[in-house]
Length: 309
Image (cartoon, rainbow, N blue to C red; front, side, top):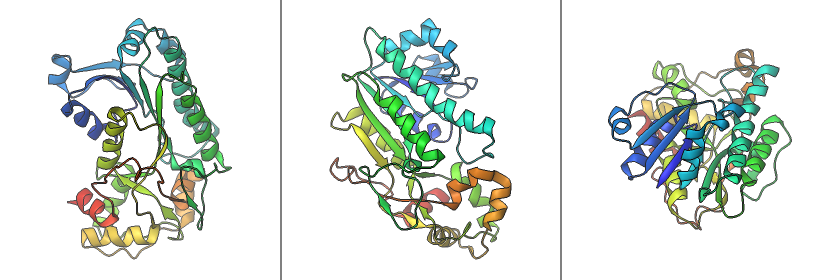
């Protein structure tokens, strides 16, 4: 397939792009970053790199990008500024919204104008859609929460769902993605390896996670299996509490995990962004079993063993 990819040069893309290339797909990658890596693939045309900001309206006036969209069989849009890495100042909140909503709405408008639109749009969302809770269990059919992240995810999904009806559309509500070279686990590993790790906040909050390998497999399956459409929770079958997560991480590393990180410390560092770590949600998928998806890492022990080996 000819694939047009947005937001795929970061943490998830480091594993996704090689997987798609290995599967024989031809990739056009749109990124704000300068082209790097994939020298052989760029030389022989298997991967084309376009440096654009997809949230900017001027990007969508570029003839080369519009031509790539017209030729694409499918589009994968994972674009969005990281949620929990900075304080949520008014400026940063605006960036969180713009990077998701403008990219997606501009993309959908461009698809609507295509002479030969792609057959599929795979669009990211997040389990922040459901809000946070210590006792509720959320499925794809659950209603949205009422906080900033829930509102952002709801609007993000609505923008993607506005594609023409002839375009198959998959929305992946992604949980905490686990791999050693980034994300939440990447930040926790150096501390835990010294033996000073422990639960963040109360430890009671839920962590609904997915190993990056399984997330990439979900995206690949969305591209190739026409029975996949609509909202799918991209989470492993075993959500855990923060305390259980930290105990298992300590076990995987052969280190203690006894020293908690007080919530106020994280709030000083991240402000409102700390909510992502201090508050969680227990999320499962009622759809993946019916879609016959098999996780490579269905339980936390195997996922952390793979990520820390």
